[in-house]
Length: 94
Image 1 (cartoon, rainbow, N blue to C red):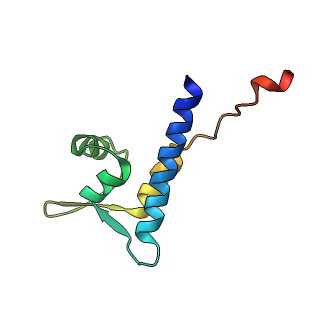
Image 2 (tube, rainbow, N blue to C red):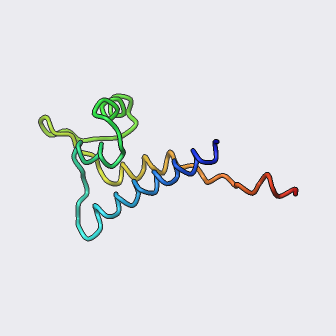
């Protein structure tokens, strides 16, 4: 059922945002490493590489280490944000 899938996606996004806020709350941390980024987003190393290659997420590289700005991660989430669907829309005419 599509409604259940949408709810699950919204909950997953909320968890990512909460994790981002808790990771940065009370600290001046502006960047996260590749491992932390993959964990936050729930993605594989290959997906992170694809997102970098396709310009989906900005990154910094120092030697062999990859870093992502917390602001860029938040921007990515905002760009892909969808408003919740009205579950009562169908029932309004009833």
